[in-house]
Length: 375
Image 1 (spheres, one colour):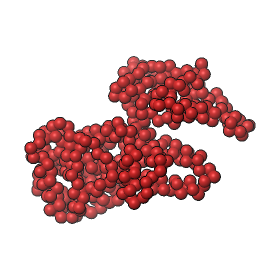
Image 2 (cartoon, rainbow, N blue to C red):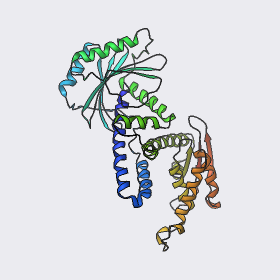
Image 3 (cartoon, rainbow, N blue to C red):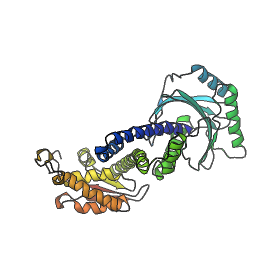
Image 4 (tube, one colour):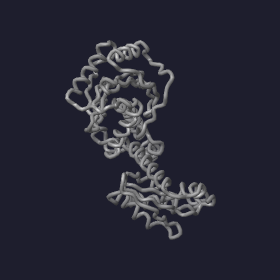
C-alpha cells in the first residue's frame, strides 16, 4: 500500500532532474557568474523546501475523485468488492503532487487496498497490502520500479505488467497477496481504518528516510540511469539532495521546538516573545540556515543600506558569512561547527543554552538576545 509514496517520489524526482538540466544549461549560458548563480539557486530551492515530499501526510476527505478513466475505476472497485474489499474512505493528498486515493478494507483477510491516481499524469495504480504482527508490511503493486530504495520492513511484489484494464488483473494481484500471507501472522486490523494505517506507514517510511539523510547518492545515480541520462556530477547530486535535507531539518526543528514549548510553563506573552528567539541546532541541521541566523545576530546593528563603499570585502555581513562558511566546512559535524561559531558572537549577543536532548534527536536549544525593539 505504501507504493503510492514511491510513485509520488518518482514524479517529484523526475521533476527535480528536469530542473537540474535547466539549471546546468543556464550555468553554461551565463558562465560569467555561474558560481554565484549556482549558490543562489541552490539556496532558493532549499528555502522553499524544493520538491521533497512531506514527512507526514494528511489525507483530506474527498467528495468526488473525478477519475480520469471512470470506467476503469468502476471495474477495479467492483472487482475488489467481489474479493471482499469494502470502500473505506475517499481522500485527496499532496505529496507534493496531487493524489486522489480510494481506500478499501478486507476484514476477512485483514488487509487493505489503495486505488489512486497521480493527478498531474492521470496515471491510475493499485496497491494491495497487509501488515504482519512484527510490524513489517507486504505490498502487491502494479507501479513501475522507479529506482528508489525500500526499507527492510516493507516488501514489495511488483506486477507492473498489469494495466488494470481487466478484472483478471485485480484478481491476480489479490491471489499474489494471499500467497504471500500464507503461513504468516497478519496483524488484526478489525478496528483499524484505511486512513490511519496509511498515515502510520507513511510516517514510518519517512522516518526511515530521515535516518538515511533523505535521498542517497546511489538513488540519484540510479534514477538518472533509468531516465537514460549519464551519471550526474557531484554538484548535481548535492543539488538534488538539498531539498530533502532542508525538509528534514525543518521537520525536526519544528518537532523539537514544539516539544520544548509544550513542556515550558510560560504565559502567552512570554511564549510569543520566546518563539522567534529560539535557536535550535540538531544533528540534521542544515548549515546554511544556521549560518544565516548567526550572521544576522553578529551584524544586526550594521546599516547595510547606507553603505557607500561598494567593495564586497568591506561588507560586514559578507565578511561574517564567509568566516562562518569556513568554520562549517572545516568541522566534522554541524553541531561541532556551531559550537565554534558561537565564539564569534559579540559579548552582548551571546546565545543562552536552555536545554539539550538526546532522543529522538540529539539537539541543543538556545535563546538569542532580546535586542529587537518589538520585544
